Amino acid sequence: MSRTKQTSQKTDYNGIDNLAIMSFAKNYNGSLYKWIKKTTGSTASILDFGAGNGEYANRFPKTTVDAVEIDPELLPLINQTVYTDLNQLPHQYDMVYTINVLEHIEYHQAVVNQLFDTVKPGGSIKVFVPARMEIFSRMDEHVGHYRRYNKRMVNELLQSAGFQVVDCRYYDFAGYFISLLYKWLDKDGRITKESVIFYDRIIFPISRLFDRLTLGQVIGKNVMAEAIRPR
Image (cartoon, rainbow, N blue to C red; front, side, top):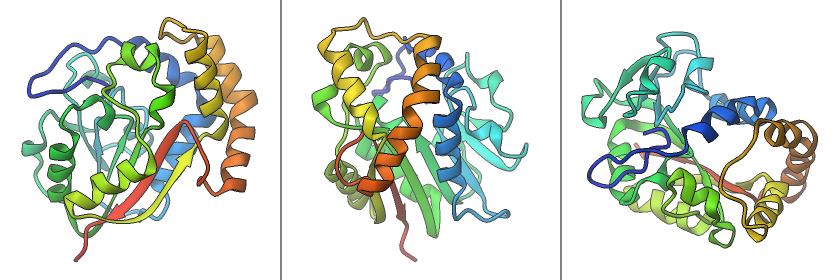
């Protein structure tokens, strides 16, 4: 689903330009991939729900990850087995991850309920979403977000589906304040390659230091959570 806004029917995504530019955020993407892989064994079956342009799925060895993606423009960019519907999946998975997807789905609880069924008993899900409605800006509108989250919302979303949450924290401490400034300046919702590279190389490493110092419990631009399906 990549970053395609979802209701009961597909609508056009108008932020593919932002998605492509974010590929230049090497430190940011590398940090997320490290989190995705953490505690995942080499033989684990993995599903990337909403793989987009394959930013994370393509980092795994070919054929070792399944992906779900509905945007036909993005499908050729994914170097893994790709499905366009959750109902097409051939089996359950040891781990499912979804990065910046649920905010594009109007009825997100129904989708998380479906994801519960894709996880093996004892398996896990990792969820990463944008945080804090007070920084909802024209950028969110540009890329088709319905909402931004807080930790309580993510916990409730996962628990209502039947998952047991084992970790939930904020991510990118400095990004919250940069996003707040972006909103105050009333920017047009787009980002540039130069600004992404500057943030990624200069500010993001400092931001992650603050994430570690605060244990992700104070504030951040995103929420990251991990939960398990009880046996």
